[in-house]
Length: 189
Ligand code: G4P
Ligand code: NA
Ligand code: NA
Image (tube, rainbow, N blue to C red; front, top):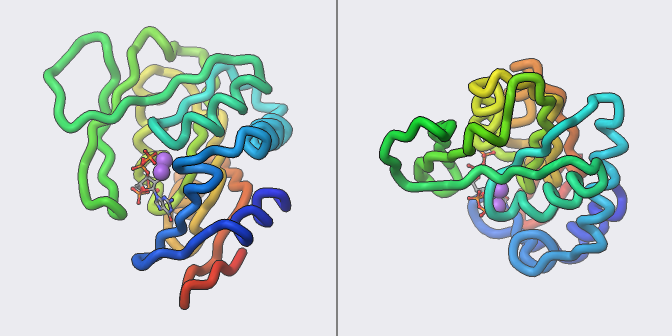
């Protein structure tokens, strides 16, 4: 997606540890016009998938997620992150380990919001190692529903998430793919 690639080129800042800071349009301040285009693009890409729900994870997935859900005219669900949890009957729980943050979160979704027969599009802001996307996919599968696909705003293609998700059989569509952040420079795939 050219518009998004231009934005990354103009406003993205490469931090140490292979992290791209995009807090002027995605992770802190958000650009609603750009997010609207993101929603339209995911809708175009997954038009044939008959999506019934969009699923993301708080907090930065919510903006691209809601714009996609708006365009598709389906509900958005965002998984909640919690440190640790007492066992409950009415929620799906999965553990997600973050290599970037070196911490494990439990992510939860209320069972009443995903049902067998649902076709769920997973949306997230970043794809690195794929841990968050795999955790969301496991929740969809716990619910007896189907993963319709995975829509990513920015994929760091030098990390293994995209390949691992594809090998697991998921259709992954990333709007921008970054091949490298070496020497502080963003190189697109
Ligand atoms: P993974 O799910 O693909 O394995 O990614 P990882 O655990 O490494 O990512 C942990 C958090 O860091 C996620 O946000 C993810 O979006 C974010 N992240 C990973 N790489 C980058 C990057 O290069 N730039 C930016 N800006 N973020 C990155 P989170 O903890 O869920 O936080 P939130 O912002 O959604 O609240
Ligand atoms: Na995220
Ligand atoms: Na994030």
